[in-house]
Image 1 (cartoon, one colour):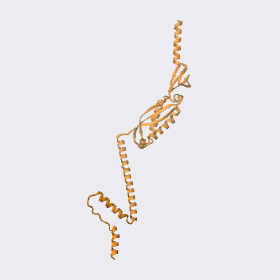
Image 2 (cartoon, rainbow, N blue to C red):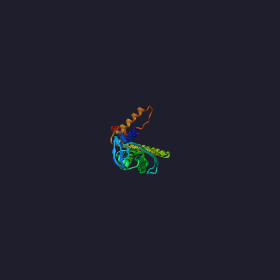
Image 3 (cartoon, rainbow, N blue to C red):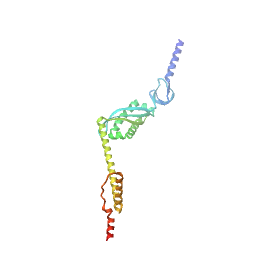
Image 4 (cartoon, rainbow, N blue to C red):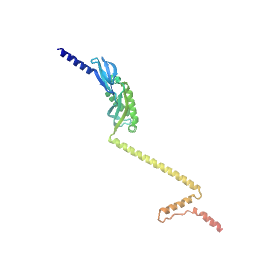
Length: 253
């Protein structure tokens, strides 16, 4: 009888010790409550909990990667798109994460979804497609400010996909093609304008030179003769031989 009693006490002690001892990893903390009231945050390492009096809740301090499911967003220019994202956050205050909010993972996920819709709904589709970095920072800043009371730090937000319907994809393609054509026409017009300016400058220089136009005329004849084997009838300007005729006339006189 005494042996059975001693064995029972030994088993009870072993069970109590097993319940009392907790081992927390380096990235874990234990939020300890004593008789229902917060006592302290313990860990990492070996932690002793008084069974029946104290309870402990484990909290992981590592960065959590959370996928935000696709959200229906209506942009400021009334375009309906589906947008999904990924949020990176971690717990920096285990006490607040357990006491201030129920299931902080669920709360952060719901807040990320509503914030994503709210922020993107203030921007046009073109901004969503071209300025993702700025939108990521806006969403991250808003989430971080709202989750600070929960002891959570949002480190990064990345918009993953913006899904458009086929008609909108075709409209964007047409718009991009029209923009490329517009730029090509502008570049061509600027080239024509610069060429016209250069020709005007060249004509002014030739007009100020007595023999400049004649030299250019002879150079053109030489280039045509070099590049073509055909017989070319080219009008000869009288201005080039008029000085010679004048001299001959004056000699006869």
